Amino acid sequence: MNTEEIVKYANKAKIKLMDLSTGKKNEALENVAKNIEANKEKIYEANKKDLEYAKTLVESGKLTQATFGRLKLDENKMRDMIKGIYDVIKLEDPSNKVLWTRELDEGLILKKVTAPIGVLGIIFEARPDVISQISSLAIKSGNAVILKGGSEANNTNAAIFEIITEALDKTEGFPKNAVNLVYSHDDIKKMLDMEGFIDLIIPRGSNKLVKYIQENTKIPVLGHASGICHIFINKDADFNMVKNICIDAKTQYPTACNSVETILVHKDFKQYSELKNALIEAGIEVIENPERFDIEYSDTIVTLKPVNTIEEAIEHINTYGSHHTDSIITKNSLEAEMFMNNVDSAGVFMNASTRFSDGFRYGFGAEVGISTNKTHARGPVGLDGLCIYKYKLTGCGHIVDDYVKNRKTLKHKDI
Image (tube, rainbow, N blue to C red; front, side, top):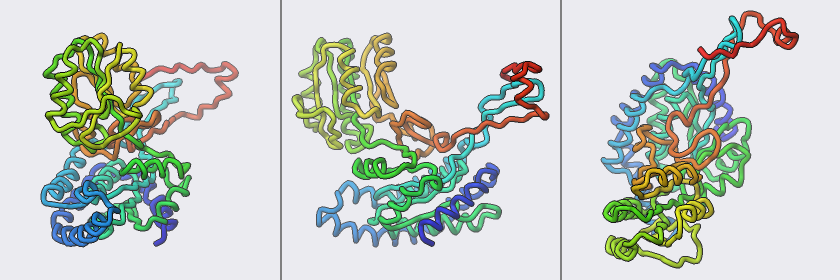
């Protein structure tokens, strides 16, 4: 099938998915997990082919070593893939939940109810394990999904997709074409042009990929182009806490979007030099006079900058940050609250590493991505972020004219 046909059939599947029971969704997910377990060797063989091709891309400079590492599937990643599906099975079904009920008048009841978004377009790079992760979240939340992975992982992506599709086809009553995979770069362009047929695009990959998608579609995009995260060290901060948090936030996973890029230090914090030396000893390159403050290093590099006040720190973060995750280290709970209220980011922390900004660590199970958006979903996005809501109104022949002409009065009573 071509992209247009795939999207057409995905739209048919989304209607059936909306009415699917939690039990049927979980049955489908269990079948997927078992089929992946039974076909691990098939996936490994496909992955070997991709790794051989990827090596030539690394040697020619077309692929980074970090991307090559994310491409490789080993026993640990396979175990996590399968466990991740079972973890999603255990999560509460996010769709068809009544958020509130309101009696507008006697016999006229309004309910706000969660509902799947519809058709998701997921465009990702390198990591083939994303297919099982996103497919699981889509199935549990009642969404159809169209996946497009990087060409460097085509063989692995195809193998995992075929195994998932086989399991879903064997699940009685589960709609066909709920999970779909496309392969070419042209498919991305076609997906981005299908406003009205694809309801949400979620990119997972480099800044370049995310920005390209954001700039080339009218479809809502959930994600973030960059992760420029900050830590502000207040004047009263405990040095050992400062040292441990800052080193963890930079070195635990330097290329992660929630690693710290700039550390702001209050001018009255007395151990600035000791902190700088501790960072260097931890293998971190410290830059004190950068040309720009809006750079995402994605490496063991950090900017260290003194500030005069907490207000200056907040202003700096709101000016140069990416609204991802920012943290304050302090003993002053009032100033911490001021910081967290006024920093305009999806995650604002006190006395904790920015690396905690993660769906798994938040207890969301798996995550579909991290969003810095101001609408719908923000921060690490799990199952709940794949649902929107609708209003269900039940009446007994009620008409608006009765209320306009004061024959009846609306009560607006929450029940």
